[in-house]
Image (tube, rainbow, N blue to C red; front, side):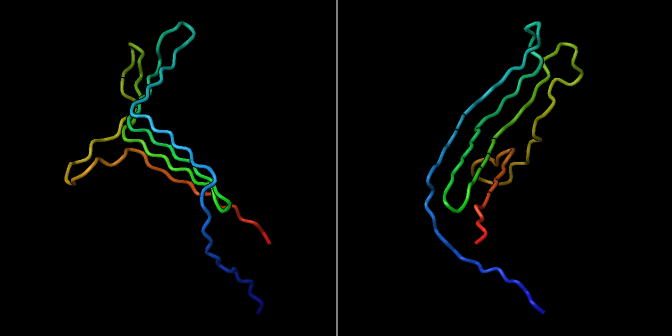
Length: 110
């Protein structure tokens, strides 16, 4: 039986580009045609990191706090999105509300 095998090669490659975006606080208002605020989106400790090398591209996202508010006066629920508070059993800085990473490998078929 013929089995094709893949060979694992470990290779170090320094990043050719690194971009950091860090915002301590950020807010965005969406308004309708009548210039009335409809939605307010806010974050705290927004961190975005992008790096690329010959081997891979990496994106890391971390948001300490996130909230989406319905600003219409007749809104039943004024807060649309907000993380639930966690019990403070641990020491150190609080955990982020959102954390995600994406790694894309530059795979060449040779």
